[in-house]
Length: 309
Image (cartoon, rainbow, N blue to C red):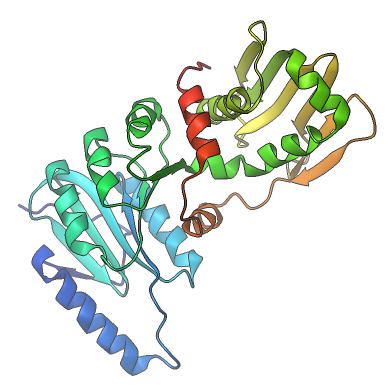
C-alpha cells in the first residue's frame, strides 16, 4: 500500500513509481525544451524540503515564487512506506509517506550530486535530520518547537552549515541593535550591562536573539534576562530593552507594525527600520543565496539552548 499523495501538492504533476522519477524528469525536461522560448534555466542547487503534509504545500508555493533561483526541489513527507508514491512536475518531485529510515537513501538518489544540496527541515524525526548532515551543504531548520532539533544541530556544526529560518527573520533587528552599539556611549556601557528584557510573539525567536546577545556581548555575572511572550501578535519580536550602564537601548515595534524604531537614551540616535517582507518565499529565497557557515548563528544557537522563555 503506497498511501495517498498530499492534497494540493504539485496539482499539475504526474504520479510515478519512485524508481521512475529520473526518467520522468527527463521526459518533462525534453517536453519543456520543445515548448520553451529562449535558453533553459540553469540549475544551481538541489533543495530538499522535509515536513508534514500541511507544511509541504506552502513550501512548494514559496519555492515556486522564488522563480529564477534555478533549483531542483524534492518535497518529502514522512510515513511508513519503503516505496512511497511520487509525483513529478518540471524541476520538482514530491514523495509522500516515506519511512524515516529510507530518507537518506532517497535524498542521495534524487539530489544532483554535482550541485550544492540545501535541506529545508519543516518537521520530521530528529534522527533522520541528523542523517542528512553528510549529504547537505546547508541545513535550514524551520519548525515550531525546535528544542530537540536544536540539540541535534549543535552536534552537527562541524559536519555542515546550519541555520534556522528565524535567524533570517531577526536580521534587521540584529543589524539595528549593532548600529546602536557603534555609538561610543552605548558601546562603553556594554561592559556594565545590567538588564535585558525581550517581549516576543515567538519564544524560540526571543531565545535565539537573547543567545546572540549573550554570545556577542561581555555578559556580566549580575546581568538579568527577562523574556515575556505576548499572545496574538505576528511579529517574532515586539520589544527589546537593554540597560547598558545606565544607557537605555530600545528596539520596539511601531503601532502600524510595518517597522520598528531603534533608540538610545544617550542622545539623538533614533532609527526607524522597516520590518521588510517576511513571507516564506522571501525568507527562503534569501537563505538559498547563502553557502557558508554562519559562526554568529552557531554561537547564538549554543547559547539559546540554555535560555528558557
